[in-house]
Structure formats: structure tokens, C-alpha cells
Length: 348
Image 1 (cartoon, rainbow, N blue to C red):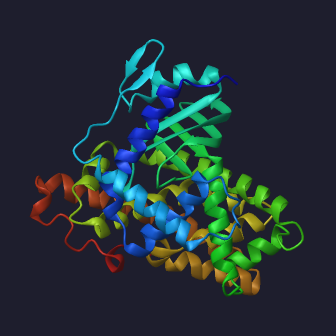
Image 2 (cartoon, rainbow, N blue to C red; image 1 turned 120 degrees about the vertical axis):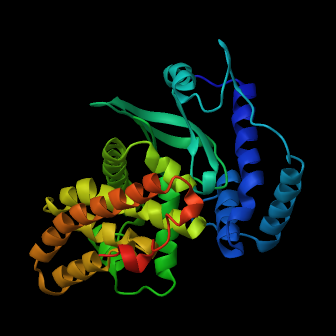
């Protein structure tokens, strides 16, 4: 693996910093501080379980915010390659040079229109039927938000370091009270109590499979729903509506790809793992799925789960196409296209 030009790394890092500067105010104070603590841990190359000095973190956050203030009004930089400068979102051209060097680059638009960039050491590159799959390990450059998986067009990224950090945060959160829930069953199934490191490796591998299946489901959703979907997301009346609309598509992708695969496996720890990650708005939208899971846990009856997944695939497709039809008919997003778009109206 060759080393990368410093100017290339600095350009990607600058774009990450600019995106953070423009969007740091998108989060509640609690969420913002949680992400900043994790970002500090990554930047300082600290172990996942390292205890953080509150004073050091506070000074770092203050310095970072002062730096962000200097970026106001600036533009994203092009990425310098030996062949010339390339737009920061031209992932195909950038990766055509980076992949032979042993690196992978991702760029896209995440929630709330936040640009997301990353540069990592490439562990695997696969080409499948109509898609490309990038696995990156150690991250050379990242920003405040590090989604473990992303899809753009026919390209899927799995960021393994970011994924492990997400998993560790989930485990740490569970450790506060150690409830007897899906996460407890997951950790027991993977032997976390006996060998945490090996268990984390196995969970990360499983989560990668979830992510690939989900992103393939997203690809199918994109083919079914068309480009108007992204326009509808951008037209959402507020962030709560955007999160809700995105969750509908997430559940459709899971019912088409992730859950059928999990229900076909003999090992059940991955299924517990899925429900350990099913929280927030997805659980509120799909309570019947979680109820079916609980019936299986309590009595061993698998049929309600299989039945509700099949039903969910049809339900979420209808909800997604219904939202799109209303969006297309409205002409203008201000004309009430999202009226009645609520958890209660969409839930199954």
C-alpha cells in the first residue's frame, strides 16, 4: 500500500471540516456532544474504552469550534490527483486512482443535506451484478458524523472502523443498566462475556452483512421509486418529516432484503442483533414486527415473524409509493403534500 500525497489528504480533511462547520448546529446539544466525544476519541487514536478527561475534551471542542468559525462562507475544495484536480463528489474518477494505491474514498449527501466525506485504507473491493462494494478499514480522514454504510448510485461503502465504533457505543449504552433485552441476548449469543474482542469482531462482521443487504435493498428501492424520492426528501417540511420519510424506505429495504435473509439462517444471534439495533422511529413505525419478535422469544413461534415481514414488504411499498404520488401531484411542497404524514398514519 503506497502513501498518499499530503495535499490530497489535506483537501479531503478541509472538506470534512467545512461540512462540520456548516452543519454542527443541526443536532441537539446532547447528540452534538456525544458525537464530539467520539470524534475526539478517534482523532486522538484512543481505545474504545479509554476514559476521557472532561477538561481535555472541552478544550479540544472549543478549539475546533473556533476553527470552524474561520471557515464561514468558504467553498469545498477540489481533490488534487496526479492527473489534475477533480470535483470532491466525483467518486468514480477519484477512486479510479485511489483503489490501485490501496485506498477508498466516499462522498455523498447525508441527512439534512450534510455533505459526508471519508478516506480510508481499502480492505476489500468487489464488483457484483450492477454494483461496486468498497470495504474500508482504518480511516485516514473522517468528519464529525461517520455513517458505517452509504450508497450512492450503484456504489456501496462499508466503513468497518466506523462500524466497530457504533457497535461499541451500543454496548456501552447497554452496560449502564444491562436490561434483559435483545442486546443482552445478542451479547450472550456472541460470547461477549467470555471474549469481548472476538465477540466484537463477529458482531462487526455480522453488522457488515446487515449493511450490505440493507444497501442492496436501498438500491432496489431506488430502482422502484425513482429519482423523485430524493427530491421529495429534500422537500420535507422539517427535519422530523425527513427522518420519518427516510425510515419508511429503510423499513422497505429491510423487509425486502435483510429480514428474509436473517429468518432463513439457523443461527439466531444475528436476528437478536437486528432487533437490538431496531430503535427510535423504525420501532415506532413497525411495532407489529417487534411484537412478533417478542412472541418468538417468549414461545418459539417463528410464523408471526415470517408473516409480518411479508406483510411489511407490501405495506412499506404502498406507503412509499403513496407518499411519492402525493408529492408528484402537489407540484409545490408547500401545498400540503406532507399533511397527514405521521407515525400514526404510516405505522404497521
